[in-house]
Image (cartoon, rainbow, N blue to C red; front, side, top):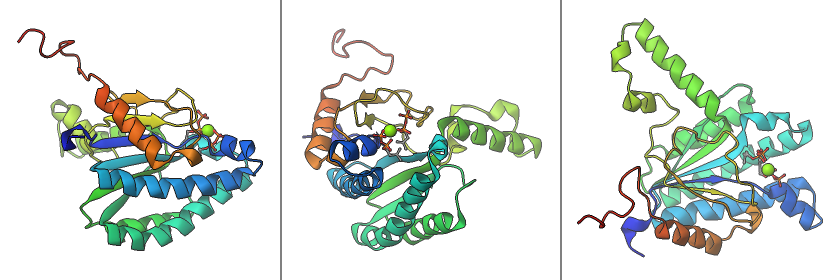
Length: 241
Ligand code: IPE
Ligand code: IPE
Ligand code: MG
């Protein structure tokens, strides 16, 4: 596979942990734990393959609607794993960042997030973007507020607002998503990266996330490589040549 065919930015909606657990006669917590282990493996594998940014939807702003004990389990899982992953990412030269709102995350979760972000900030091989307490609408509202504040303070003028400036005010300024994967057979975006996904190729495997192996990831890349991305241009770029 040519290096140029590897998507620069891959986004994954990590879905199906609960159904995987049910299918295997386990509780939902076990599904989340196994899902996180799988996630760890996929992050390193994707970056090893040449993906530059991997964005992972691990907790949405709407997931706070779930019952308290599931939310607590997930927060514990994030805290404990981020502490441990720090060393691994130092070794692998991976930079970890987060996208999402701080409110209403607990201090201990925010501390674990800030810690891994700080310790890995100079790493250069690839970036893992954990979307935690992330909502796409919230991101657009937050960017709009920042821009309005800059207009009010005189830092920029209304005429300066364009797509580039808008992107600079999102949680992070990354290349657009090339490939979006949502596991578990669901075919919806659930408020994930609405700005960044505008020209992404979408791929919806039936597999529940805890079963989403490196081989499954390779399959997704193969499908992506066969897609004809046109970005509004000609149907076949060689047609008129
Ligand atoms: C994805 O698995 C993990 C999170 C949303 C945190 P789910 O918990 O949504 O699993 P299902 O969809 O109930 O199977
Ligand atoms: C989306 O999955 C959020 C994450 C994967 C973190 P959900 O399982 O919460 O989404 P819906 O409710 O099925 O749309
Ligand atoms: Mg789900």
